Image (cartoon, rainbow, N blue to C red):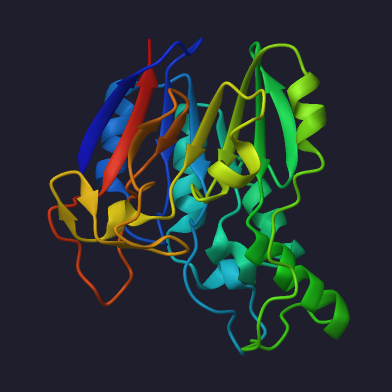
Length: 252
C-alpha cells in the first residue's frame, strides 16, 4: 500500500479511504496512526458480496468491516458514504454500521468543526432500495434486467451548498463529477470506485467501471477539488498492475 499526500487549501488534514471490500486493514491503521488525520472520510465500498441465504444480515458475513470502522472511529471522527457494493445492505445492516460510531452520510450532510460533510449515495443503492420496497423483503432477489434508477439523487445538494463552512462531499463514483457535480459550490469532492484503472501504464489506467477503456478519472486531483483514491483492495479476478492500493491524505 502506498501513501499519497495532496496539498490543497483544506482546514484540517483529511484521510481519504475507499474500496476496502472487507479486506485486511492492518497497514491502513498503521498509516492512520502515524499520520493522525483530523477526520477520516470513507468514500464507499467497505463491503463485498451478496446477502446470505441463511437469514443473517449481510454485515454479519463481513469479517472485517465493523472492526475496521471501530478502529477508524477510535482514531478520528469517521464519515462514510455508500458505494455500489453497498447496494446489498438493508436498514439493519446500516444500523450496525452506525453503531460503530461511524457517521453514515446517506444522501445527507452533517457539520463538524467548521466543515460541512455530505455523502452522495450510489444510484445502485437507490435502485436496490426501490426493488426492496417492491418485493417487501429485507433482501430482494438479484435482478438481471436493466436498472430502474440510473442516476443519483442530487436534489439535496442545494441545501448542502447553502451551508456556511468548508463543504466536503463523499461521492464514490468519480464519473458523477462531470455530469452532476462540476458546477456545484462544493470545496472538496472525494471519490474511489475506479481502482486506479486496474492496470496502469504510467499515470493512465486501462479500464474503470462506468468509464470503460482508458478512463480519465481514476486517481489524483482534478479541477483542484476532485480527489480520487485508487482504492484499498482488489476483489476482482484481474490483478492490479503497476497500481498498488492507496491511502490518500489531503492537507495544506
